Image 1 (cartoon, rainbow, N blue to C red):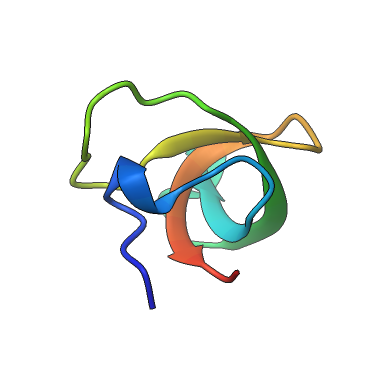
Image 2 (cartoon, one colour):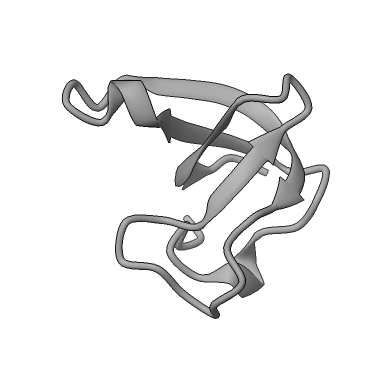
Length: 65
């Protein structure tokens, strides 16, 4: 499985599971399709921040496609 902490692994249109800001305590994952990549750096220790097609924003925990 590709690493959600590396920006190079994430492209617009792929399916991912993210953790929303309000779910960081519980680790609850939200499924969606990437619309925009919001993190500018090459990597981030907690996952690359993305906006989903549903407009939800969170950090990538799993790359599904």
